[in-house]
Image: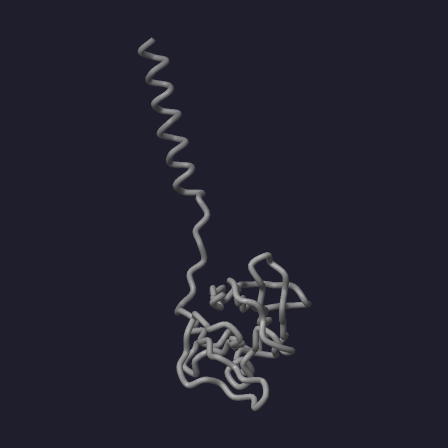
Length: 144
């Protein structure tokens, strides 16, 4: 019985070592990507002065990135997409690089105000129309 217990302990230690060495690590980004949201007025194409994550009913959120954001690398295309609480895409724009998101914020809706609820903004790098890396995934709320 002692030998069987000793074999079990050796197998357990070996399995722990193998697991610790082979466990995949999460990729680390060098810095946080500062996504900002503003209320957007489509009639005069103006943004509010103050960024926020909660909007009043009737307001249209628009997403942009701070000017001090780290770029995604040499001319990597990005996709900026909005999703509602059920996962339906409400708006999506493919941009040649992160700089275009700075100069041209992406609204939740291009046609009209959307109903109150929870929405997600997702920013990802793309290659050949395929998402390569998710750079940001941010929750936004419109009051009901």
